[in-house]
Length: 143
Image 1 (spheres, rainbow, N blue to C red):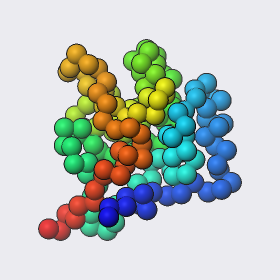
Image 2 (cartoon, rainbow, N blue to C red):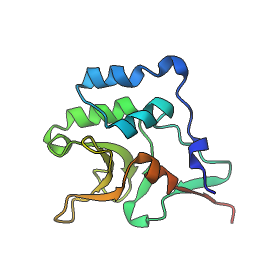
Image 3 (cartoon, rainbow, N blue to C red):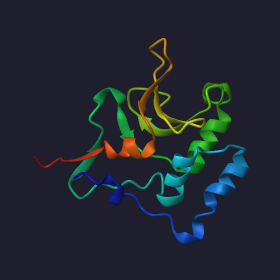
């Protein structure tokens, strides 16, 4: 079984309240499943095993990883105005194909890719962050 979750750093117990503080600072309520993820794992800490890289099997997503911290993602959300806020989508994952990246809905925890090239701007790709991450795979770059 592919357990990519073991490649994330755990949030230290003394920092568990950090997410609540960020919600207040940015005046945003994270959806419950994503919030639990952020209280458990450091968002930008996914580190592959030696000689491996992490991919998503759907290459059309352009998955490039969790490159920014939760606070950085919340800054992007709050500083871009209507671009994300009208749709209540928080950008969380970098995409090499889609400029808007991969987002979590603040209303229902679902994961979407922001696709500016289609009539449907946000395309659902997962039920929640845990389902999305469970789809990630580590591939050896030595083969």
